[in-house]
Length: 262
Image 1 (cartoon, helix red, strand yellow):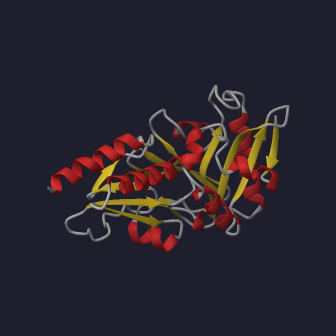
Image 2 (cartoon, one colour):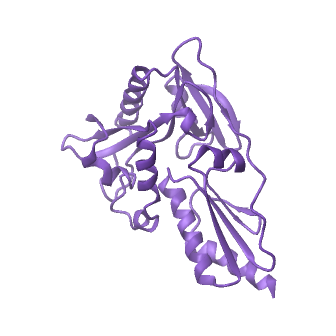
Image 3 (cartoon, rainbow, N blue to C red):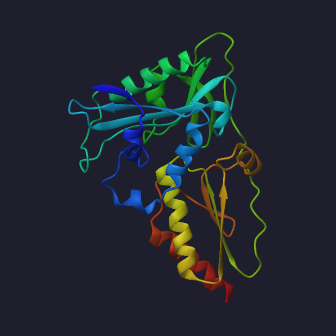
């Protein structure tokens, strides 16, 4: 195993979260690439794990908490840590210690950058990004929002625990007589970008009775206003986005709402 810094030679695979073999990576578009470009200039850092052949099979990304969707100061925040676990593509590299090595390398780097602690998020149910995994590495609960736990590890006694921003309830003013599809999109997560792109395509295909609105929440001011990072609403009703709903499901919901207009 090798732990590498993110270099220009790694950008193509990093920008698709190691899933260059996956058709959904292309379907998600270039939003993540643009997000990475923007946030590299704002302190985004990443470590990569490679196998003995030099093939990148794991990644962790972290950035100053002040640039994230978490309320905190003086910390770094981990939006994602991921070791390739599919049989397709690179193969399954889980349970080989790569995640632990990536986390240790990121923590060491954050300390050197002057961080007072590291924060991360995880699900309290045993799915992807398990909060229990972080707890095994010394992280403790800081806050909870639905299924998502915010966890952190202070590096010094003056560190302050982070908090989730309150979830917003405000949506754009709907256009009367239309089905209103609203996608909040931050850009950091390829899977969530996929939801946005599917909603955009479905709205366009269903036709003139649909108004699609995308709200870019990569800017902190926009996120604080709306209180949503990545979310999809159809006529004000939330559509679950984890795991990403299929294009057919999104289109079916929109078509059902259009029929009600008649």
